[in-house]
Image (cartoon, rainbow over all chains, first blue to last red; front, side, top):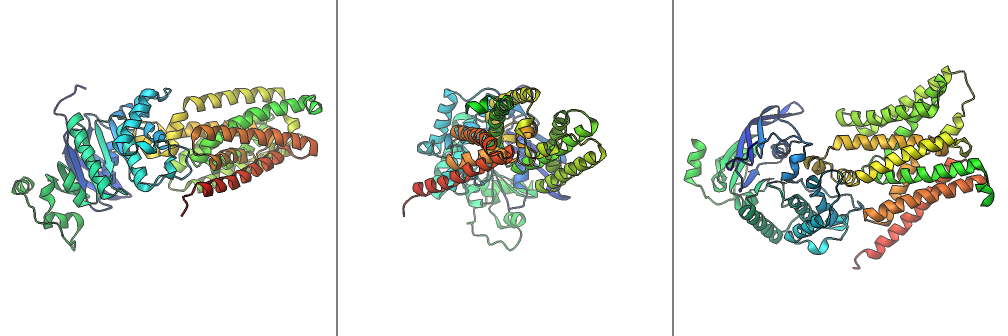
Length: 264
Length: 274
């Protein structure tokens, strides 16, 4: 397939997905261009993780079309070296015999392929990404001995270590304090500007998503909004996404353009 | 020492023991990390069905036990992945079914000359030159595969979801590990016995994880545990006239408990002082 410069990183058209007989995703369409940070916000159980798993090719939708970097994603697939993935934080079993560096090196495996072992170049790249998330001094520490936030940073480094063109993040700020978050999102913006990286991240945290993304979708089984981050911060959309009875504490920052886009 | 090595059967038992404890200990590392320990119990007991079927058909019990154990190991893998029942229930069903079939096969066969007790509990007298060759060949295949796919097995055990997302054929790797586990079990039946072989799929790996949190040393400790338990157990069983499998597993368990104490002590020493 020829590389189209305007090819979107992720394109979903009319996705329907069922789980245990229940439609978790209903007619979801969205487009994430290359070189942008895309946020998906919505309540827990709203289908955010399902959507990520479809983009990763870990499951197929019941209906609809998926294109990731121009291809239909299907794991296992060797081309996945172009996609970095951060799953939701789950604490590793404490005694698992790997160091932080070993974990980051796993992010290089897809590029190496079976049979080849990580070499000096891979180690250097892994150490460099550990440095990017401020964990270079923890490289040799057993992964299980790190705190939740530190494990999260190492997992982010692993997602970056394969030099992905698309980064998929599931609740990336879990366990990371405000200062750490600020520098993490600055890092993402920097990678986007320097390498044209596309980022899709899902979170239940509206504040984080609106502050650090270029585009946003509000998802609760179906898309309630798709556009610039500011546009979703009105009572009507938030209530439709999160349900009535929600205390809207964000300040009124409606953007007329986005409103028009949504209504049109 | 000289006396024991002068005996042909003892030399064969020791050679087989060294090979199979190395292989079991290497697999044990991944079995413990991938949480396949209980599958090892299920597969080894299922091998009884194969041994009994071999006895019924009048062919080599080991030759029938190999496809039998490999089949059950992979069936457990498939059912636990596809089915809506948990892996513990799946194993519980397969393992009792295979044992039940084994008892039926024995009932149907009119030969009583097969040493079933030896298959169940291990016997150092039972190792033939043919067994030794089979052990060496299977052992080389299993160790070779482990070496080649080391980083893949490690990744899958550490984080199945991310391994799958980064393109590793997780299902295929799991079935390969289950097949290797089944082969290792069958090649160990003669010396250690069906009832106890699963202990050597769990204890060396679990012992190593008490002592280190680096995978290189962990593999080494796992193999050392397996070797010391097997060779020490074989000597002990010869001099004290005890069942070989039982002696080996008792020695291995003793090493595990020492490591457990040592591990707790080490962790306390490393804990930050308040």
